Length: 324
Image (cartoon, rainbow, N blue to C red; front, side, top):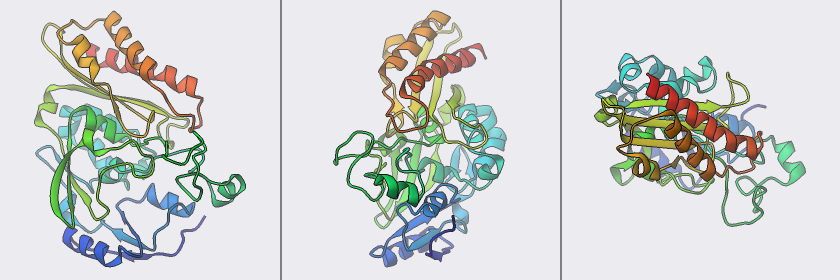
């Protein structure tokens, strides 16, 4: 399908981009970085806006310095960054599993943490949606997954965000009211349409990674139908701190593609802190997280299979991290 008509704006600074957003806000606009997800939605005529504000020419968001990642850094650049390969393996693993190499050379980290939630009833062509009647997130006023009109349960589909939440990363945003820094774990909301607490005018300019991440063992696992293209159907990100005696000092496990936002299993640390890591403990952790997981029936694989794979991926990831 071809793209619908829109006016493209090419600002050279964050300030200029925000100024343009305020001029066209009444007509409607989207910011676009790599465009690998947004333009796909536009082709399917999903929530198309008459103005697109490109962030491509904003140089101040294109570098990696002191564990601060500019929002316009591509996923391919992150995958190949030597410092991140050494000190933040989990983010490298997450970014290197997004789409194909062509997608990763275009897609940006800022775009990935803001990627649209996905649903079987939403991510379809206009003809398909017309035949069924669309959904709450598109042209209809009723959710097709859980029949009601109050909230959308489209599934969170970012690969990088669960890993960033696992290490307590922060997002730096700039908008009409100035700059602010938000905890990644506080940024997302249980709403498949709204998705996060970003003001419409705001741009994510920087991802701020805690320097203590270098002392953690981090990793990422996911399943998808096709390894070279598809979005995650289940994903698990983990960040572990283990002392010299193999005892757990801290453990963060975050699930993606299960609910409407990255799901942080905060009780895991309290249950197992101070205990020596073992195969039986890994099995217990994985079973507890699997039991709590409640996927929505809105992706291509059955709920029962995705729920079971939560435990499989947790066990696989924790075993790999503790053996390294």
